[in-house]
Image 1 (cartoon, rainbow, N blue to C red):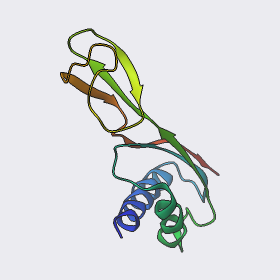
Image 2: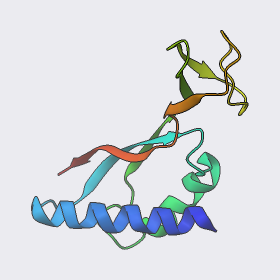
Image 3: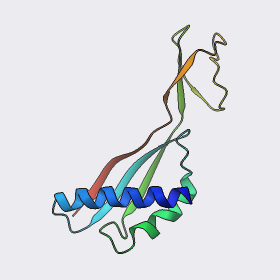
Length: 113
């Protein structure tokens, strides 16, 4: 399961941060998952507690913020959210677009004690 390895990587990174901060536990984690990141929310939510077992993250509240795909058109400069994965500007129908949001999978914050 792809999400389990991502959850294990997340736990490893946050364990290092918690150790640097002399934290005894991580009580909350806020991650941002883009719609095109390849990370599925529900499997990730199930994988996280398993990855966090016997670590400072065990029992931490996992808050997931999902962000939509936003594209920018190179021809008309429109920035817009898209809900399908058709990479076409809805204003001018150009296919010369770039994804400016929606590919991310990032740690936004963590709460420690």
